[in-house]
Image 1 (cartoon, rainbow, N blue to C red):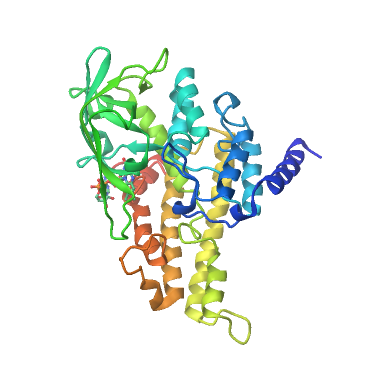
Image 2 (cartoon, rainbow, N blue to C red):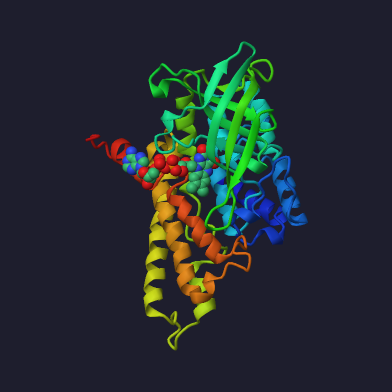
Length: 403
Ligand SMILES: Cc1cc2nc3c(=O)[nH]c(=O)nc-3n(C[C@H](O)[C@H](O)[C@H](O)COP(=O)(O)OP(=O)(O)OC[C@H]3O[C@@H](n4cnc5c(N)ncnc54)[C@H](O)[C@@H]3O)c2cc1C
């Protein structure tokens, strides 16, 4: 048996022994994930146990080095662990922006001391991070951001506003893009900085969406003093001052990669496959087929597209692991995943019919089908809009000219 086959056997046995049955429901809805952070309360004993067991092996962040709380797995080993986890429908033991966004950027740009402080706390689920990129006048054109960061000797002085900051109200720290040079060309005066949300002068105001959720906030910074350093070699700035755009872009590739590899047809809409959900809701005809020909056709098409998408994810992930990462191709996956996610919940709404429109007497009922359907419209906006992904794909994947 090859080393990787042995590894697979070992992982299968470990998962079998350690993943509680309650965590094997395939649930990937945001509200049922383990997010971690200072304010985190486990939703069940099983969730806590699963997190603690995974943590003890470094499996909350399998590919990160052991010295920063990971398991030091190779890309091939991590893929096997993921495949075996999915094979038993197990949830991830921990998911958050620290793992999917900041962590990879720190691994690429951070000093040892920055990694030691921040990666370890992410791996242990101790600190929950939010992303301070967008501003009222800087979304798609992110590099035009204006949040002011002035050098005051031993600290930075920060003033301005971020918007659409997901979970800012329940996060502990924020990674932010700020402007440190107003005279330089816009991409060259940006700095990437890490801040404790408890710092004096930071305040948040949740924004309510049509779905009734309030998953993101306006975040205000008024004369916020951020130390230049959190310890020796542990600056609050990641990378070089005024070179934050390099860090920002690296992080966006990981964000889009994460958004582009998220099982879209199951998406945020519940654990069952579309077909199974339809059979349960509508039933079968005399010949054992789904008793609604139009819906049958649409579900089959969506499942086929999803299948092609999954194969593409697998191929691009293998290519990325063997070479230089996903790069601009993450935009392709992000685009297809957001379209499939929206189609998935639309089909679920069709399957359930008029009752699907119910969202509870308070008009909210977090996690309901209608609520997910409304929320999923956000997927073609967050992490960069579909039009922006098209621009990136045309220029950086297809090599087309700008005009
Ligand atoms: C649910 C959700 C969560 C989010 N979470 C976060 C977060 O945690 N942190 C954070 O910083 N941000 C977050 N965002 C913000 C998100 O990144 C921005 O909404 C997104 O980048 C678009 O920016 P905008 O809203 O300013 O739209 P705009 O940039 O104003 O775009 C408006 C429209 O113009 C189009 N457009 C703009 N420029 C071009 C162009 N060059 N070519 C073609 N079309 C163009 C866009 O596609 C869009 O249709 C979140 C957004 C959502 C919906």
